[in-house]
Image (tube, rainbow over all chains, first blue to last red; front, side, top):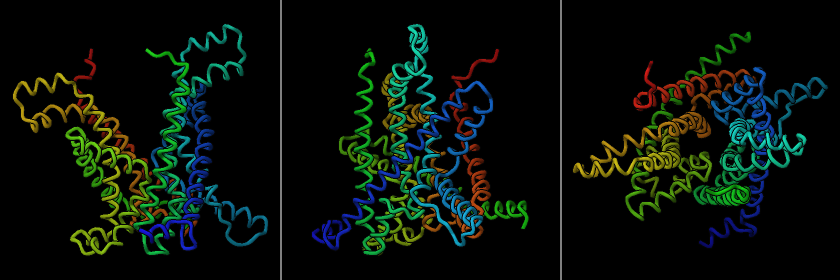
Length: 237
Length: 230
């Protein structure tokens, strides 16, 4: 037991510092991918509810393809494809050699693109759930578009979208483990490194389980609290 | 090599990995479904079983699948007891490890879906079956499970699609299924986009066929929901 504390603690032989940093990295890359996903999702939801056929088709294509293809494949596309593109640009500018894309950026874009497809559906559903009468009423009292968005549409949208968004966030947290293939040192990569260099894989992977469970449980509780808060104005039957 | 040749060459190499993808998906989905039903039924049977199943679902749904695969493939071999056991010839092979990890992972998600289905079985149907004198086993076989699984099918279909995509993680423990082959081709040629499109087309075809098959099964199992033709 004492050796386990030594192994995972903050002493000179311990991996504690690295593990805490890795946990923060997982949190950072997940948050950044989730935020990117909100942008893609908003764009997708807007396109899907557009009147013109072209944006609708494009958004349908986006959600169908991205949700039908393994996330790992999308990460490889961005990792290798991004590096090739970058190297090509660098060569054109007269630089030689290979230019790699930063793992954090690759993860943000790839996982963001994937989660954006799911967020498209969440946001579209939430938008459709806003009662039409409320928007009519807001117009009738003479609210401008911006004021209506701020006072009527956004609070409603947030309330309806929160449960779905919470699910997508959990998904993003777990998917962030795949970013370890780019070499980004988040939890998955760090426990793998620890497992390899100490030859005690079991302890390190169990630690990984704990770290992910801490993140998923705490953020799940946060989302539930936010849901309750956003429900304050809802009428209960 | 021309672009066209490269695409056909890539496609034929990727299709060589398809059997492994299909094996992983088929075996883990079927075994996972059996385990999911057992877990969901066990959860209703006793207090201890309920807590065990809750813990199982909590841990497996709260951690990444990749970590679970690594735990089974690299983590378990650390113990001499595992290395000396009869299971070691299996646990040594990435193919079995991937199937085991995918199975226990999908069973966790699946058991929650089946639980939802079980909750949807009308109490009257169960009471009627009891009155007719059915044993517990017959009750489950004839009444509860058919209604519950029919109810759970749409959600379970989504889980199956997710599993087909999840088989790609097996490539990280050296299995040359479709994604593993795609990775190999990309690192040889650095033509990420073309390879992505080819591999993506294979997965899209698989998931498309799967969702169609599930839709057909759903219609077949719910004859009472068909609208009468006028």
